[in-house]
Image (cartoon, rainbow, N blue to C red; front, side, top):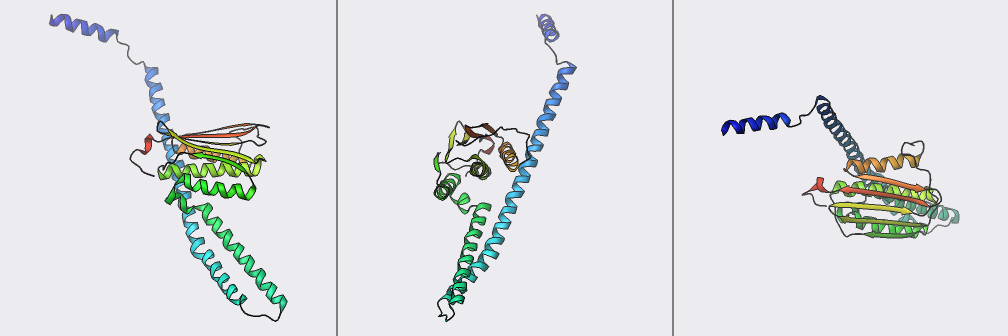
Length: 258
């Protein structure tokens, strides 16, 4: 009986297909390719992290340096403005200087906010975008439909999606010639999905075209999504507008809170 089992097992092993040399080589190449892809993803992620760190440094320097100096100068000008002037021309120059300094303070605040929105870390992606989109809509009289689930995501994901969405808004503002924009953020099946759509003039999209600012911006969005193990698809039709769809899986961020 034992001999029969051994014989049967030997026959099964003989009949069982074994990987050929070509198959082993293909599997080895596939493993190597996956390893290289992960190395590229890590390199992109390190580069983006370095960019964010540099943004943070510049933000602090502007806030603690130029912005504070301008604020102090404005206070001196306001104090000087309370004194009486016999020279009307000097009074006008003082008022003009105060206006320019006040404008410079506002511009420095906008620079600080664009580098690193204070609300992004404290309140999250959805609250930050809601506030900024409302302001943009008022400034340029856009009709913006913003719908988002009330969620907090891992910090890397929120930062990446914030940069992608802001780039999409900037592109629409500069190139689309539209007055209508729709932005959605949804969470389902452990994946966050983002869509930014405009009803502008559209364009012929070439993923390899980096000859202009729009091209580099679109590539930046794709690379950011890929660094988060996600995807960024861009669909644009001349005369019909542009749709940017981003999908990020969250299974790589288990245990991380937003």
